[in-house]
Length: 292
Ligand code: NAP
Image (tube, rainbow, N blue to C red; front, side):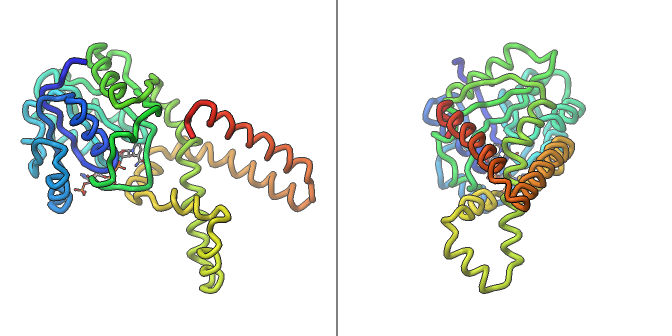
């Protein structure tokens, strides 16, 4: 792949720091830079020594960059692009790693000059950890990256972003942004909402019961706490910006949950067993696709 001249990571949490590891180990750019708004985060980035320069001035950070990667919560992206728009080099590529796409596809081009290429992206890889120290280059290996370019997107710019994710070890899927948001609502956003809700229920329990839950958490609750420990601001923005798809899928989920409630009340073991057998097959499918 042709090298980038200067890449700027805006926001430097789990995803962008992981990508910075990839850029460093594979020498994907002549110069790598990071901008983060807080001094504490900038100091952590400097200590990691995975980028060449760390900026406290966002406009300066993008000067002469041919690739800018937005790795901040979805709700902060449009404002950031508005601030940097006039400092961008003609022909530069802006891409993002946000978990919601339609809102960004609709709003970002409105604040970008025509000579800048916007390639929306979403690497489907993550952990519950955040911050610059949580990143590692293996994060993306064998996972899917979904890109949601518009119809008039430059093929060259798209190919460059594709190649970057391929270098990170990802498989690429091109998708319509709205469709992406519906798929992710069910595969990621609703499961997170369920985890936040179940763990939230425990916080309301009386003290004695709460102690028992934590003690015996290996029975299933522990797996939910891992998911529910994810970054609160990131997830707040996911639900606020993908509300339509989430509410649609949540409606279906609640109907199915009510059906399960009925099966239990009516002692309908056959229905329960039938569903649990079907769900086991889904797990097998994920394992055979090597996505477990
Ligand atoms: P993270 O580890 O929580 O780091 C967030 C970064 O964004 C930090 O550098 C923080 O800067 C910056 N930031 C937060 N709010 C900001 C604001 N209002 N203005 C400017 N900068 C701000 O984040 P992450 O997990 O890498 O997630 C980044 C993006 O990737 C999100 O859009 C998320 O939807 C997407 N994503 C996440 C995952 C996942 O599993 N985590 C997976 C795929 C995609 P300071 O530290 O300086 O405050």
